[in-house]
Amino acid sequence: MDIVVCVKHVPETAEAELKIDSSGKTIDKAGLVFDINEWDDYALEEAVRIKEKLGGTVTAITIGPQDSESTLRKCLARGADKAIRLTDQKFEGSDAYATAKILHSVIKTLHYDLILLGAQAGDTGNAATGPILAELLGIPHATMVKKIELAQNAAKINRELEGGLEEQLEIRLPALFAVSTGINEPRYVSIMGIRKAMQKEIKVMTLADTGLTENDVGIAGSWLNIEKLYVPPVEKQAEFLKGTPDEIAAKILEIIKSKGLI
Image 1: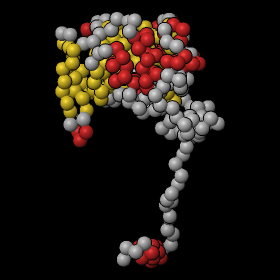
Image 2 (image 1 turned 90 degrees about the vertical axis):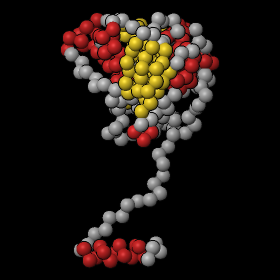
Image 3 (image 1 turned 60 degrees about the vertical axis):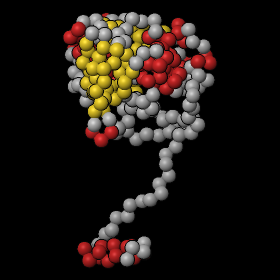
Image 4 (image 1 turned 180 degrees about the vertical axis):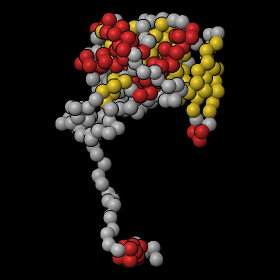
C-alpha cells in the first residue's frame, strides 16, 4: 500500500496576537511559530498506521520555503519513508486551485494507492485543495473522513455530517481522503526517529521540475485572489457596571428602558 500524504507548514495562531503586514493581504509572520497543519498531522498518523499494518511506503509532500523542511522532518521521524518539498518564489499567492495543480504535477508521476491530507488548513480554512486535486488526478475522493477500513482494491469509510450524523461509503482505490481531526491519536516523535529523519534526503523541486508554467501557479494561475485583509471594526463594546447591587440594578433598569424593552 503506497500512500502519499500532503502536508502544510502553517503558523500557530491560537494564542498569538496577529497583525496585518504592510501589503495588506496577509498576516505579519515575524515571530510566529510554525508547525505541521493540525488536520494534516492526523492524515500522516493514519498513513503510518496503514503502512505498519499492510506494508508499503509513505511519501510526504509539502509546498513551502526552506523552513518548511522541519515539518517534513517531523513526517520522516514519525514513519514517512520519503519527503518532497516543492519550492519556488513563483508559487507565492497560489490559491487552492493553483496549489492542487502544483501537487498534481508531482503526484501524477508517483505510484500511489491512497492519498491522504487534512480536511482543511489552519491558516486559510478553504477545505478545497483535496477535492480539486482528486479531480485533476481523476480519482474518487471523500472529505471529513473519520474512519478508514481497507479491503481488496477498495476502502470502507465513515464521513462526518452535520448534526452528529455519519455517512458510510465504499470507495474504490486509488482514492483521496481528506481526514478529520480525531480519526486517530497522533504519536509522539521519538529521539531515535528524529535522528533517523535527519539522515534522510528531502527531494527539492522547483517550478521548472513540475512541467507547469508561471501562468499555472501563483496569482496568475489562481481562481481567487485576496484583495484586502483587515480586522473587522468594533461595532459594539461591553460595558462593565460598577457599584453596589442596588446601584447596578438601577443602571440595568435604565438601560432596559432606554432600549424600549419596558
